[in-house]
Amino acid sequence: QFADNAFAGVTVLKSAHLENNRLTQLPRNFPFDKMETLTISRNPWHCSCQLAPLRKWLKGNRTRAEDSCSTPAQYRGQPIRDTPALRSCKLPTKRSRKGSRH
Image (cartoon, rainbow, N blue to C red; front, top):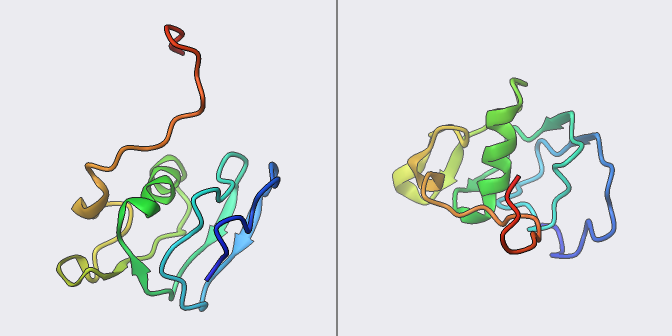
């Protein structure tokens, strides 16, 4: 398990190999922005909205960093990229000034 602030201040992380770690979540501040290679297989992922940024990264990157949900039970075995568990999650947006949309 990562502490919530495990990646505080990390701005450029290009590669992370997290397989075989019994991870169920990633910290909210996991630095996906510059991530190129991410291996996450063989972890018992808990598919909740905390994994929504991971799902967004998986959808935007055609890498094989695919893994599936272990919990909750109704989503067991479903790919994180495609599970309905994460479809309605709101992604935190970068702080933006009111009125300016990019």
